[in-house]
Length: 149
Ligand SMILES: [Zn+2]
Image (cartoon, rainbow, N blue to C red; front, side, top):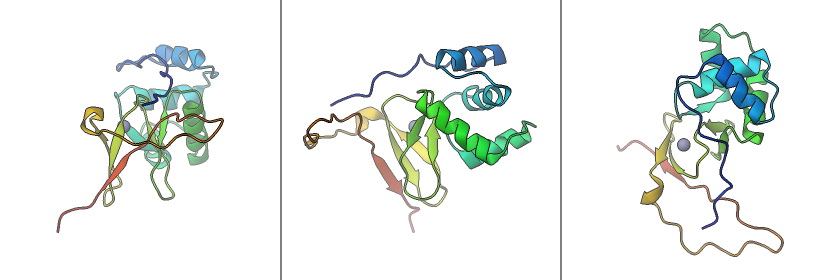
């Protein structure tokens, strides 16, 4: 299977703001106050899945003055810089993952939560040939869940 190129080095938990600024600089992003504050919220707690709305809520609780539009733009900038991975889920909301390694997800349709699936527990076979001039960069698997009745 084709793997996406390895992302930036693993971000450690327990980050200081200075370390966050260094990570942003290394990813080619200017460490503005808002970016540092949002990156600290994102990466200080270990791997997780967030939406712009949930990160915006956290920012407000932490008294980080930032608009939802800025959170949304920042998440896309971090994704383009390889610090986050966008997870494809149908619907209006974009989900972002601080774990940029190749892995799959359960999506709970009722709670809207994403959960990691152990990569070893799914095997993908019979992938089609990539069209001329392209190569497969990665395969996303989303296993949708509903509550049992
Ligand atoms: Zn994940």
